[in-house]
Image (cartoon, rainbow, N blue to C red):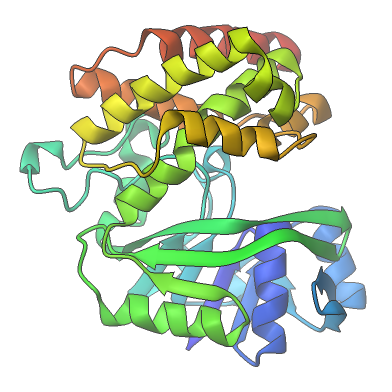
Length: 321
């Protein structure tokens, strides 16, 4: 079973290190100093069991690797358009979308055929939909956080769960094989028959606290305990729930409990805030813009989401020009 991790940064690099250590035939697509360090010194990954160094197959040229059984995409959604994935795709290759936000394949496999369409926010012009094909897609949610400590060194901060599932909801053999590989590598690999629900329940908080932190530069505890910000967060979460429910999703727990969970993260600074401060493009469209687009398509009003999105888009254009 050949596996390629397309985007071996923090999340993908940690995954690749564990899979390599477990004896899985895995290769990594990376770039820059991180790639050079892995080629020279191997990949060092750190988890609750200590520090481990493994020699990995890593390149920035997919042509060197050829067709795979699984391609796990762990790049940001903004990096996917135009990404050279085709050399990795064979007749039966499955593509696991281990990415933040609403996935580009979301409407594939829903009962209403008129909803089988790409999402413009995350897949402009349907480029990825055509080049990869939604029939290859396996949905995924990753519930662990990792960071690149230095080039060639990744560390798992917390968490261990990795859930995969078919957009069609079936318990397919390819998903069961993927979960088996993940478990072999030491993850808590699971197969979900409702992967869209998993996506919505993860993004329910991300689409609120990522944008608000980027606008205010506040940490999770501050956003979740300040009375005014807590009210705004609740408004945004209600609109997300309305959109998700309208397009086939189901949510677990209450809005108040989800905000309390954010408060429990304390001084944690969101990935969107970290990207903003580092001068990197934010995953704004995949995390928030796609929800607003889906709301328009489903005739669900999203006034607070639209307002936050508009302000943050202007800030992004100002900061990156």
